[in-house]
Image: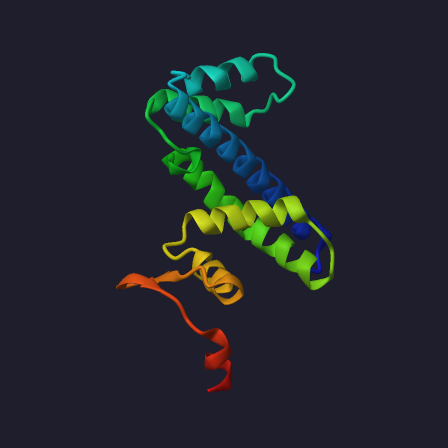
Length: 163
């Protein structure tokens, strides 16, 4: 934890900004997917423009959202926009510091931790679903797949533990 309160305030501001961007990105992605699934033909840039103009969720960041979706009408996820990526990268040290410190001191910052976890999951090639598959197989013989090996597998976990 930083010894200088002014320095730590910068981390807190970055963490807030990161969590806010993550929330908007998730929401816009949901709108994108709903529009795609149900043929709504939503114009995400125009949604951001409307919100920017007088909705309760007004924020300066809505201009960035508008610009990203206006520039690329087929943008599937806000975090794929280069301009947004630059801002997220700048705020990443803050969110990592704040979430790490909160965990170390037993403080619950569930929204911040969830936004960081969401981001890390998006950028990960290997998802934690492998562990979930193994747990399901252990408790109910549901089988699992392996990375780099074709097929569906099942392990007799109790036999493995004895070995």
